[in-house]
Image 1 (spheres, rainbow, N blue to C red):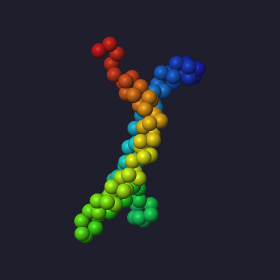
Image 2: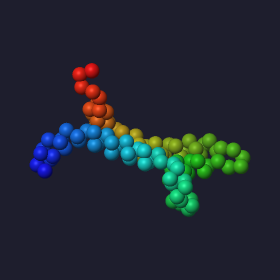
Image 3: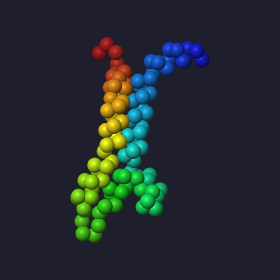
Image 4: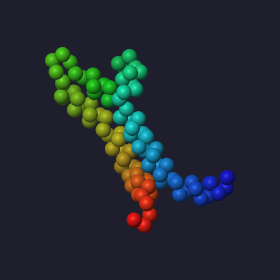
Length: 98
C-alpha cells in the first residue's frame, strides 16, 4: 500500500486529472441521456434546452446563441484552471523516445 501512495499515485496524477476533466466536459455536454430520461422541462440540461428552442416557425437563433453563451463559461473556467493538468496528462500518454 505504501508503494502505491508514494510511487504510483504521484506518477499517475496528471493522467487521472486529465481523465476527470474530460469526464466532466463529456457529462456537461451530454445530450442523449438527459433528453430521454427527463420529461419535466425544469430538469432539462443546457444542451437539451438548446435543442428545444425550435418552434413551428423555425429556429430562434437569438435564443440559441444566448443559451450557448450561458453554457460555455463553466467549461472555459474548468479549462483555464486545469490547463496544465490537461496538457501534462495528454503528454504522458505518448510513447517515450519517439
